[in-house]
Amino acid sequence: MSTDLTFTDRGVDVVYEGTEFELDKELIEEATGKTYRDVTDHEVLQIVAEDPEFDGEPVRIGDVL
Image (cartoon, rainbow, N blue to C red; front, top):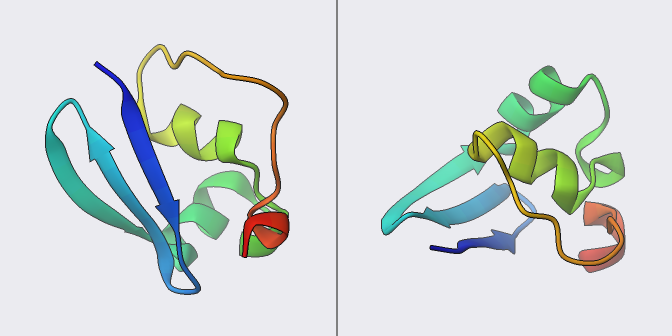
């Protein structure tokens, strides 16, 4: 199964193995030690999935928004 990430100003909407939830940007900042806009999609996947499959180069959330 794939993991779908949708980035917003509030955080990331996640669909992981059929389960939908939201990661608040404060939680992401605390987990990574970075500002929300400097975190990459790969870092978010590492928070969500035990053994994530990365597709392509990492992209900063700030570049997506």
